[in-house]
Amino acid sequence: MTRGRTEHDLRLWGHRGAPAELPENTLASFRRALERGANALELDVHLTADGVVVVIHDPAGWRVARVPRQVRECTLREVRRWDVGHGYVAPSRNGRPAPYRRPHVGCGFGVPTLDELLEEFPDVPLSVDLKAPGRAVREAVLRLIARHEAARRVTVASFHTPTIRAVRASGYPGPTALARREALLLLGLPRLLAARAVSGAVGAQVPARQGPFVFATPGLLAKAHALGLRVDFWSIDDPAEAERLWAMGADGIMSNDPAAVAPALGAAQRARGGW
Image (cartoon, rainbow, N blue to C red; front, side, top):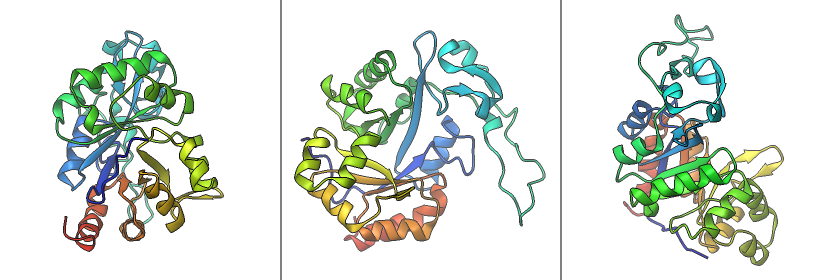
């Protein structure tokens, strides 16, 4: 198994950038996340009809841009016209809706390509989540990572087990995260059996809790670390919860609000010896 975890590598991931402040998965949102204290970025990708990898979470444009079309049915030129300012909804104030709930509509927020993001952030660790299964998007993403010589800093992730295993089988030299089923096997199996189930992975990106499954336990962290896996929890926006998870031994936090969680990262770094 590839061993990718280091004790000194604490990460605060901007989950889709800093969507608590700006429209998600946009270049401006990723920049804001780094300004607010994130030291890594998490993003989602789909493939357009003309074979371009674009950074967007949903398979369709309705939620973020009010466009009722699938990304895979549109060309890059068409997707470029989407106004993803629609996807940001301002938080309520004192229990009442904000005066203008979608303040970023018409402000030029668009869908970036993965190529643009790799170019703009050449030294930042990235986690690229393949949201759709299939060979085309997988191979397109790996080609881009290779072109930018970025494998060392790009974790490839996917909820789909066949997708992530195909990435590993392709000889991808960078880190990969556990698929959903692999994460459940890590949680439920004894360490020796879990080692086979997660072979080839470097990271577990998991919620603290999802339904009946509790991942944020000292036992799970100890098992993962014994297998050489780093553990990054999503999506954590509460500073107290971030402090609790880092104190438990988490390697990273994925947050929609890096500004809120950044002080907890500093405290965790000091507690682990000042790095």
